[in-house]
Figure (cartoon, rainbow, N blue to C red):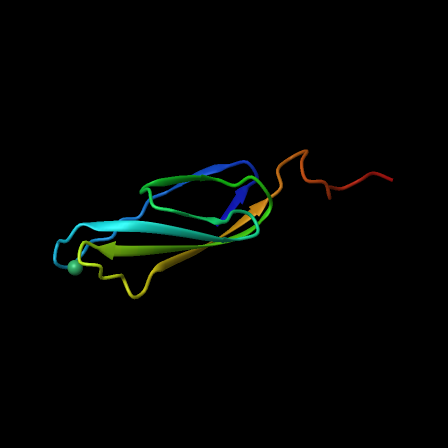
Length: 91
Ligand SMILES: [Ca+2]
């Protein structure tokens, strides 16, 4: 997905454990735009600068079993109007 610098995006995980155990969520953000680990769900994250972010959602149940195929998402953060430079210039 692509977002504009300064945007806040809410991410919501919706895993279901096959045994009905409660689950916890861990969002891992790595990249040039945002880095961090968040355990809220849903989680709201602001993208303060341009770049890319790879997001991995680890889901763990109350027995410590982790989803072996965590969901991943790549976010590209682009500059907004009037910011970041690099825009077209007249002659
Ligand atoms: Ca389970």
